[in-house]
Length: 341
Ligand SMILES: NC(=O)c1ccc[n+]([C@@H]2O[C@H](COP(=O)([O-])OP(=O)(O)OC[C@H]3O[C@@H](n4cnc5c(N)ncnc54)[C@H](OP(=O)(O)O)[C@@H]3O)[C@@H](O)[C@H]2O)c1
Image 1: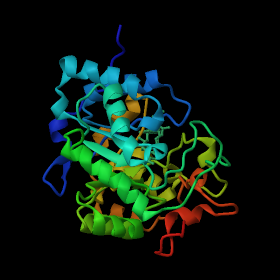
Image 2: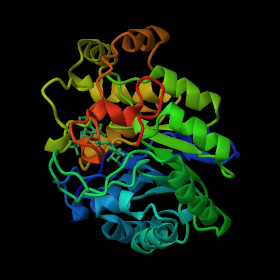
Image 3: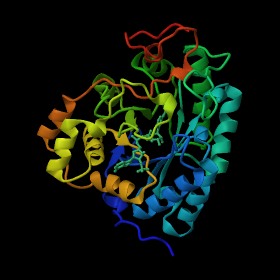
């Protein structure tokens, strides 16, 4: 017998963000990266039950290695629960598929695996063509790794634009970008990025980048919105901090009588983000969805969390470095200039 699910939220009351072209994306989606330890079957089960609970957005990627499992869940959703057009499905082009000739075939593989005819959003997962195998450790480097080369990125982007023309994807976007890289892209793109996916949580708030995106009508999608407590070993360093353990977040959670995770999500949505927390625990993913439809944070709460920023990037991306003795800071153009390739 099917276990009883927590109470559903009516998807119609989940707020949406309107994108530059008028399309609407739900503010809450379910992340599907199992951090190398949650199986595709478990994640597919969460996708199906999350849809039953009211989720209408799923954040997928080819490199997560589970799109075929999720495709089965999506099929079950269309076969009885709700039609395809009620959902927002995102996938991502992996780093070893940046060559223009590989972009369409990668997208079509994701469509086949997910058993859908179009994606709502297709992201370039990282702005570097540097491959790393699933489950690798922090010292893994691809032998032909290189830094950001704008002309190469524009070839990839041109092929992404064609996917829109062909009706395979509704929107295209970026992920793990920086302002200087986006400046170049905005100069040269025929089709502008609709969204940019990036790490955002109370300990890594990136306020300037968030304002830049909102000002340019690019929707920020915040990943690791809870500080990714289950992230792989390669993404952990001793100086990392956790927004779920932050005393300010915890005090606000106590006042609202909710878990710290819910405070992180309310805060993110109230500052203009779309969020995609991962969970395979029905109690948690139901609570996360409810968090964005009830009991908002006060302006005072928002101010207190703004002051709790630790500028602590958790997903540093070391495996994408391209030279000996480089620091992960080189991936993020921290002084406003693209690090030379
Ligand atoms: N574009 C990119 O490069 C990129 C990078 C990283 C992540 N992402 C996307 O962003 C998604 C989210 O990031 P993430 O998975 O790293 O981290 P996250 O969403 O910050 O954290 C997920 C963890 O939090 C726990 N959790 C969820 N809800 C909770 C609640 N209400 N109370 C307590 N614990 C809770 C989950 O455990 P339970 O399962 O036990 O609930 C899971 O271990 C990914 O799944 C992926 O789709 C994208």
